[in-house]
Image 1 (cartoon, rainbow, N blue to C red):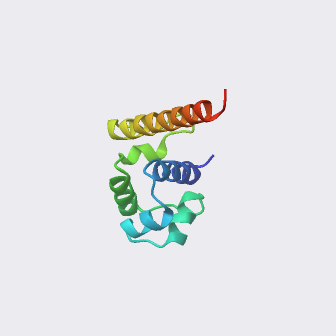
Image 2 (image 1 turned 135 degrees about the horizontal axis):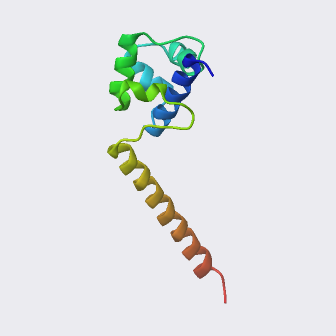
Image 3 (image 1 turned 120 degrees about the horizontal axis):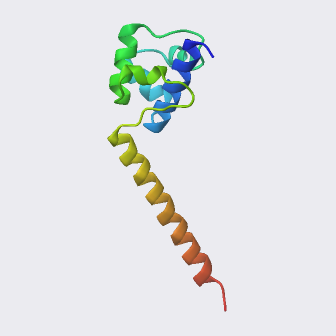
Length: 106
């Protein structure tokens, strides 16, 4: 995989972790959705200035865009968000289980 593809794949992953749409992120960094899409697909490469804007908006260091497929950068904020999402999913699942168990006649 070439560096443009690695960068684009990581950009997309971090954008999704932050729960931002392409429209939201492109607006935040003042580029078109088409340009962001092309970067994420590895068709074009971001300029240094755009990399800085993207990293700042996603709250990650620039080097995180260049990590291989086997690595991903998680800071404490991301880990807290992931933990919160897991807890919410577990609580939701438990509520559904309880509803299912108690709604059925004995």
